[in-house]
Length: 414
Length: 190
Image (cartoon, rainbow over all chains, first blue to last red; front, side):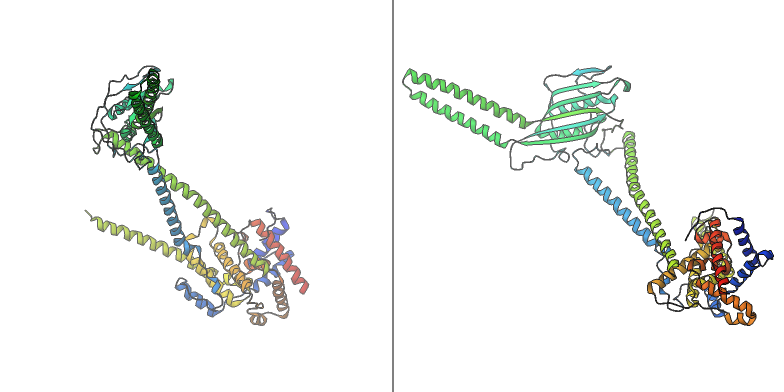
């Protein structure tokens, strides 16, 4: 449609339009506009009237409330096309189906990512076996911004000798080598806990170390007395029997007042080095044996002195190689575990008295988790829905605009 | 105490009755609109298409669509007649587009009731009527549509604006311009 500027009508134009309206309404008009009034009447007389037969037919259809039927003349099949109204259920079903599929895909992919992640969150539903927190004798650090340094090597006595090495098999990946090779394993664990809980978490770490028969290589705990005076922090370098590493990781992932921020597991295959050390020792022993045989058969003082000197060297070499092998064996038997505890948001402690019993803390924790998950799902749905709706609205607007434009073009060419 | 099942069925019954009542009300409103606008819609569509059979089909289709969409009518957005003529206009324009695609239907303008008009009017009036018809036929489809909406369908300028999707003053301006064209064409032929 051509559109002129949207301005108020000029008085003459307005007057003539009023004359036309008055004429069509059968009212008298000013003789000055007689010609226009006559033209209006003449134009009105050119109006086409429907035939009686058509009126009867249309009235009959109106009586039947315009039930659909084939075109009367069979020439206008193109008049009826699929309307948006009739297609609405189909469009709605397609949209809802697509949305459900997308949501399911996101949820499934998120779930699989979580399960394969090396840093799973703390099990909120208490399905992992928890051990009662054993308050050990390690010095807890309290007070205003005090630092406790447990320097040196400290061996903890195992508190739970019948621990199961396979308790955490679902958390820590199995060693890479399946051919009986020698491996050095290491792991890093980052935990978060509220400022006020740093001492309790540190104590729990010590307890776990004691329970799995590990040692504390180095530890540092900095406890802030209030939230305004700074952040609490703790770090531990631990030696854990390799057989108990997975159990230790599992237990430390399930501490009462800490949640897992990240976890890293490392494995180094040292089979070659181990075998080399073993061969070196065997060689050293063979050399030593040969020298001893030569010593028995030596007759001169010079020869005896020379062989004894070589024996000393061989013994020294053997001791060195045995020490290297022993060190390697220790690294294989004991894994290094670095634990860092950083300040984080408050969490609801999970009572560990029973794995399946109802407690207020667990219920509150689970309720919180359910709400968080529900909010996450809602957010995902919203994130999918909003762009879809925007695209749908945009497409609908473009479609409407194009349809209107095509219709208007029909007026230009006819 | 009332049985819950009975209460539920009563609730369903009330809901059905309300829906039935709304259905009847919307139908009665549409039927009233049909009675008052049937011939106007036909006249408008005929002037636009200049084909009696096509005008009949499009008129029926317009009412059929209006019946299907009667619940979507929003009184706050305009008058029912303007809403109906908007539907009729879309149906007529679709028909024009279909014709353009098929390019098969080229019909000369029909002059309904010409014989009757000739018997009822004197020669001068008949002459001027013929001149007006010729002038109308010479107008573009856009201009012819405006004339049809105003003089054959009897829409007010406000309704005209609503059908065309423009402001009332804009519709008045366009209408006046079209009438001037028609006047010139009629005067030139007479």
